[in-house]
Image (cartoon, rainbow, N blue to C red; front, side):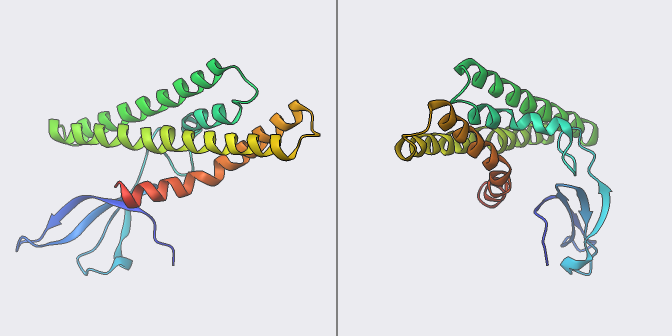
Length: 188
């Protein structure tokens, strides 16, 4: 059985004041459980319509991976290109934060709820889309580059750099899920 990761976004106390029903947001939908208490009773109620984080991934979401691509190409491009890739990734972070804030203003409108949604979105996206993946790809690229230099002394420089870029690019899809799971587990 596969359990999707989710976050409780609302509680629904009964007449006696005891919470037996909760609303849970997963990556793809909002679910409300019935009051029978079984986890299998969670029913999808509202698909999540998210301009930047939809299921399957929207094209805009890929801009959040720009810094990982920049880090992968670091051995063969000028440093300013890597800096631009971080600017694109942070653009995604700010756009997602604005989207979440706007939705919370429409949904709840209370300043505290809006502040929490805004803080959650900017922190989550900064860590999950920029800092941790960028650092991880940077280290993979550096480690691969050192290994290629050490063990591939007969290779021309451009081939070694090409191998380093290829390894780093291949690692990008592999690192995304473990990073998200780690952040859900230890941060959220």
